[in-house]
Image (tube, rainbow, N blue to C red; front, side, top):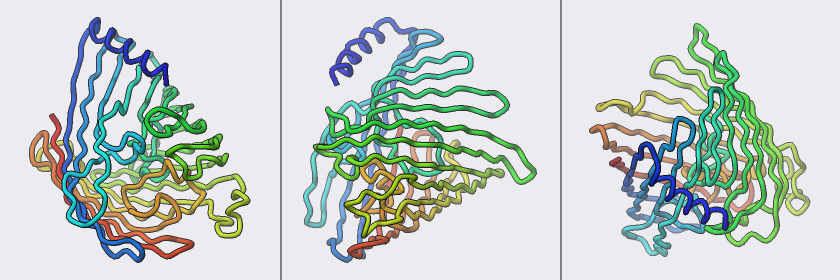
Length: 343
């Protein structure tokens, strides 16, 4: 992590000598109501996610980006802080931390990201990786021409605010094909994760090696898009869990989407179904937007609707219903009302 602090000093120097600098900021306010649990008590609260970022362009090749965000700095896939809690649960910490800090180099056919980088491979949903997590490493996009690209990432996921746990590498090929049915985007990808013992915060399955073969596909026709993310682990279930979770290595998500939020008055509707077996993802890093109690070993529906009121403001709602696949029974209905303003 010492390299990150060196990078901060370098970034400040870059801003002073940049060709141009842009600042972006946003605030999301959300009401959450979670009910219909078996072993958990209902939860009602008002939460907020605030972020501010700055991007400095040094020249036609290099730019540098930094972002600070609210959330739990030792569990960065929880970006929200609680403003008001109606039910009787702990409110949690209210942290602000550096959520992204990276350099970007753009060449004729290649783009490279280095540092604490956002997730840059292409998927229809966040089933496999929660995009609020920004690991430390390198991502490369290479344009192969004729609507083809190659993507490669190698990075260390975070274990809290200061440390990392394990190492992940990803190779993805993407091809776009125009047909009479619409535009197909086809994205096969392979993931290799080297586990590491003794995590302090990110303890859910990060100690195990795992490998995954995955495939993302989307068909877009006008305002409509139908997409899917499917995949499976190609490693054996860890011996300690073989009896209970033997063969639980596959996952899929199907999403039907309509519209967008490009212009004032636009609406975006997303309906998806998820089925995520225990070792089909790395539990610690998988998306947690749909389910209160799990990021793996669950199935359920998720409906999200947003409407753009002004150039900088949208309002929306989200309803998720999930259920555990194997083990102690649990389920949840999560209802949200939310609005986001971008400065």
